[in-house]
Amino acid sequence: MKLAIDIGNTFVKIGFFENNLLVKVAERLTLPTAIEVLKNTTAETVVLCDVANKAEAITTILPENTVIQKLTYQTPVPIQNNYETPQTLGMDRLAAVLGAYHLFPNTNCLVIDAGSCITYDFLTATGTYLGGAIALGLQLRFRALHEYTAKLPLLQATDQPLTPIGTNTQTAMQSGVIFGLTEEIKGIIRYYEQNFGEVQVIFCGGDAQFLAAKIQQPTVQVQPYLLLYGLATL
Image (cartoon, rainbow, N blue to C red; front, side, top):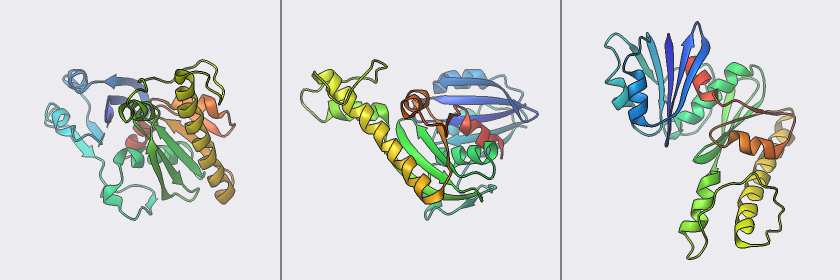
């Protein structure tokens, strides 16, 4: 048994691998819940990605003979990293790109991680990571409208049909956030297709299903466990 652990800003996700196959996932765990899940683990190897500086709380409860590897910018990886400041690159971004490299070899890949922030990361078909972009995620956009204004309410995304013409404050806010973000995503996809040709678009993160459904392009796939696959490659 090998474990891949993704410690995010909000939740912890644990992938259980046997013979390099993902056989079980425990997700949307709080840190205390994740510790309970791991207390009796018999895993031989654990690979972690930690963007919240909480790894020590997990590693200290693992058995002494467990091989623990934490993904850092110095970890040897099977891709060429062309990011100018690799020491500042979020390891969740790198792990997701490694997952794309594993699942879609020899393919131009645009990874869109739709979590607290939405990140866009591009990997060429020859295995070179070029970088990407960081923007506000779906829920952060709603929070910003509420917290930086005096009267706008705090809303969440809706599956109800919308048009760009909101007819009240609620639908105007939902329209602005959802249409604004989906058009941003479409524009970035278009940029990479125009500059690199055929591109495989891969969504991951908590809002992946919601946003991918809004894009409706044949090159789009949702891979909710992309980071776990990326960690497992190590």
